[in-house]
Length: 369
Image (cartoon, rainbow, N blue to C red):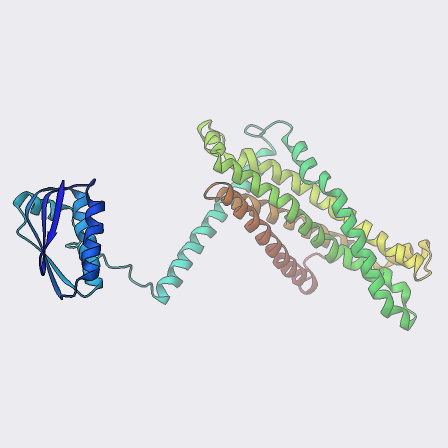
């Protein structure tokens, strides 16, 4: 039991200051300090026979309370054992650790550049592995699940057909409707067929199909791979001597490379059909004249341009989804972040690639047909 008594500017503690007695003792100290009017207070520990870490923490708290009231508090006459305990457990004698040094502007730039270089290196490794195993898989099927190519073609391509068809029809429909309002003022309504046919084959068909794929199939690829990484399924594949890129990514690479151009062709045709609906119902253009105008306006180079774009977009989507899936960190929250980042990056890269390819085909005449 601990006894507490005080005189004018001194407090005398007697007995043992242990964890079960510091609560009442602290209340007594707080009450005394709250009414104390002096500037100095002495705590005499000469009659304290034992103290533990809770008692030391109690004295530290008392010291802080006194300092808050501008009272200088000193502990005196502690026995040797008590002094050793105070030195061992008190935090008041410890130097405060300095906070982290502020990072300079150039250090932040250098760190960001270094991390970007590492990310780019990981991306290059993934692209190289995907291309190598995709080429190897054409002659040697080991390491790839049987029937997975057909399964992925259905999941990635065929299941996306309804939404791609709907968006392509609406795009062609709206393009024809908006352009018709201007062209009919000059008696050039028939050229709606030229405008929609060229825009759907060169630009709108490939890019709208790619954006649908990025949001639908790209996110699915990223979330599937990210979930496998979080649940350590990719580590299990490595322990069975199966390369995760070859086992997981390559079938998706094959599937999207095949289905993306096919859906792009369907997107072109359905978009032109949507424009034909406007031409027939709003511009009084017959189906046969509209068809003939489309055939006269298009050249084989326009279709090839759209197909080349669709293949490039397909590779961008599958590689981006796999990249963000493999680099996931954390649990379910990390999977969601990886999926979101994959979709955003895929859409951005698809638009960037479309701009570069558009300049190449327009100015460079990269394909002469």
